[in-house]
Each structure stands twice: as structure tokens, then as C-alpha cells.
Image 1 (spheres, rainbow, N blue to C red):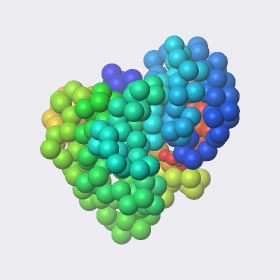
Image 2: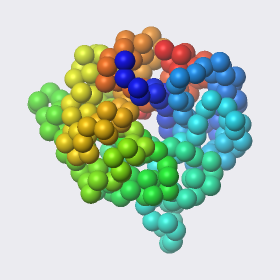
Image 3: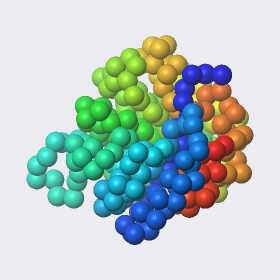
Image 4: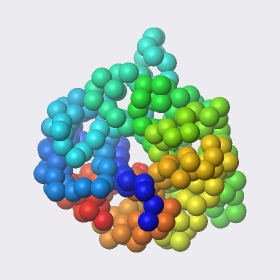
Amino acid sequence: MNSRTPLIAGNWKMYKTNTEAVETAGRLVELVADTSDVDIMIAPVFTALDPVAKVIKDSRVGLGAQNLYWEKEGAYTGEISADMIVSAGCRYVIIGHSERRQYFGETDETVNKRIKAAIAADLIPVFCIGETESERESGKTFSVLDKQVKDGLKERVVDELGPLVIAYEPVWAIGTGKTATSDQAQEAHKYIRSLVNDVFGAAMADSVRILYGGSVKPANVSELMAMPDIDGALVGGASLDAESFSQIVKF
Ligand code: PEP
């Protein structure tokens, strides 16, 4: 058994109006009130952060944003800064999600800037990496992960025991219903931990939480969580429903 507290994180993507978000968050608070030894996070859309923060205040559920921009403020129409999401009640921020990389042109370089801004604002970055289906099929999984981790964490973005979370999300498993087998996920997680060891050393490699993401559901979470290097889950679809997300939390 390792000493890493599991983290179960829900990414609500571009779903839920404020009324719906508040209702789901309120239900989740009730359903997970009796849990312990697990950290829980939900990431609603930006406009729902403030009302959701009020509902989950003093509960087991923490708040995350789905992105941030690295500048502190300025003429950057449509963007939001680290301090702004902190002021809305966030403790976590998802960075470099594959949908951001795929549809919004994010690169390892811009991901690196975002991670640095998150750390500077005392946020816990949930740094997403993962290979596409064609990269896996052509045997490039490890080299892709190697580049994403080393470029994303370039210039030693966090201190030795900083609050870094990494989410391994094979792109072919996100929203597709296909899940990596627990052995495939464990193999990737072990490799990612070895990369963190290369960049930051053993203490950080031992303490960093590495979440698995990609069609996690109540039915497959316990098998994944039984793996020694899987420290939690980043959940999309199944986090939108308070009942199913709470079952995942109680893996
Ligand atoms: C995600 O959005 O990070 C994700 C893993 O989605 P899903 O659980 O729906 O595959």
C-alpha cells in the first residue's frame, strides 16, 4: 500500500446550466458525506464555479476549473486567470486535457505555462497526458508520454514535494466506452512515475498522484484502483450523474 490519498475527479466538460450544476453538486455532497480517505473534485464550466462553490462549501467535495490562462490579467478576451478561478473557490485546475489539445491548439509549451501559473497561484494542477489510438498502434505510446511529461514539466515547474497531479488519459479511451485494461493502464502509470523520477527525483515520484481517465465507470473503477500506480480517476461522462459518480468515489 502506498501513502498517496486517492483522488476521484469529475470533469463536467461543457455540460450543465447553473441550475443543473447546483442540483448535481448538492446531491453529490449528500451521497459522499460518509466517505473518508479519498479526495473528491468536480470541475464544472466557469460560469457555474461560483454557485457550485457555495453548495459544496464545508463538504467532502473540492472545486476545480477546466482550464486557465497563464497571464495574470489583461486584454485577453475570453480567457480566465489563475487568481480568478481561485477567487471563485477553486483548489484544482485541469490542464492540457486532450480536448483542449485537439480542438483549441494547446501544446506542451502552453500547457507548461499553464502549469506554472497554477502552481504560482497555489492551485493543484491536474496535468493531462495520453497517446492517440494511432500513436499506440504504431508503438509510440512511451515516446509520446515521455515528450508530454518532460515538456509539460519543463524547468522543474514544481518543488520536490509540490502538489502535482497527473492524469493519464489515452485519447482513444475518452468518451468512447473503450477503457484501457488495468494492465495497460498500470504499465503506462509505472512508466510515467519513472519519468517523474527522472525530472524530480524519488520523493516526488513517490508522492505524485497519477489518475487514470478514459471511460471510468462504477463497473470498472475497482479493478483499475487495485493497480499499484493508479491513484485515482479523472471521470468525464460518468461524473455528470451524482449517483454514478458517488459509486466511483466509493470504489
Ligand atoms: C475525460 O473527459 O477526462 C474523460 C476521461 O471522459 P470519459 O470518462 O467520458 O471517457
